[in-house]
Image (tube, rainbow, N blue to C red):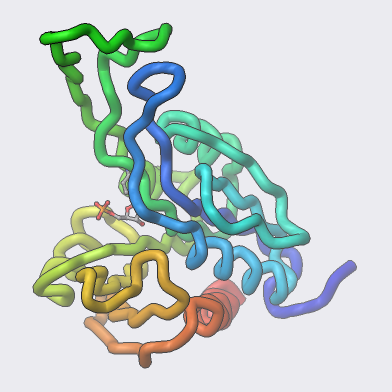
Length: 219
Ligand code: C5P
């Protein structure tokens, strides 16, 4: 038996980008490195939690001591998240692609002179909103992220309500901040009680701060 304030607690963390295929060799993705989600999984495991780490194709390796479920697409991530339930807490740090290609090709699309492929996009499921809206299977604590470029507090406050999560960690990902893909983060922490600014600090420090608060909330 390991010790720690989260011993006996099972938590889920989603992390990384998703890749949405266009054809077998091409995909739509985003610039998420998986650094923040990985740091959170590590911090939760360090506090003794049993961690299920559902990760898209990230740049950073998963931490030791967690159960890794590697996925590619948003649909696969959704299925893996449902398979991981029930959990006490869930942190949705993945940058899920908003859209996937509805008419993805099973074979490599040919480059034909004078003809451009028409990609038809369709909406991906909102995994966070879906899990936060569950009845009896809802984790006691559901935490989301919001990458915003303007009006961070107003947008993130509205987003927390819309998604139905308990806590929302909003960060300003304007290119000038260097946060997306960088090593630091600056969080505005949103709950139903309001917004609180955390100091700009390393993603590991953000992760430890969040994990500590989760341990208190789930005690
Ligand atoms: O709506 P937006 O993408 O800004 O929301 C971000 C939050 O929602 C993150 O916590 C992200 O992991 C989660 N999310 C999700 N499934 C989606 C889109 C976002 O779980 N399809």
